[in-house]
Figure (cartoon, rainbow, N blue to C red):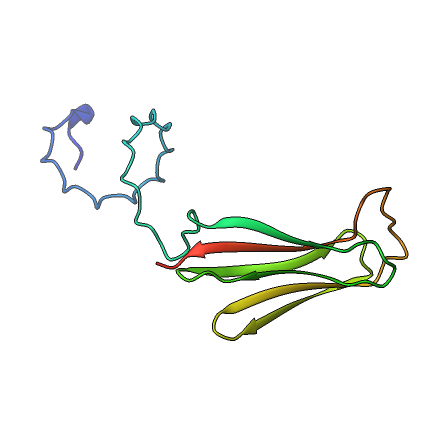
Length: 140
């Protein structure tokens, strides 16, 4: 039964702790820090198989006397100790040109130019010219 005039009794013992609640959401990322110091330069890499620094671009020419159907050739023989890695032809006033390659005792590249262009006409004193462009590299 209740006490007289509802008097207060003594405080009881503390109860058990309840279970832990769920973890909260993650916090926001902090701002990015300052960049670190620049690193030192690394050593150069080794020379590779594609090192063409010792190669040379060269041109040979062949001209004609100026007749209407005369042909001209420009040619080069591959020197021993070297290799021609690329070759191509061009002309200023010929109707057409063709690149040929032969191999006897050594490789020979020939640019053969024929005819006279109907589109391009040389000025006075200018000859029809056949150009052989090539890239010569030492054998290593």
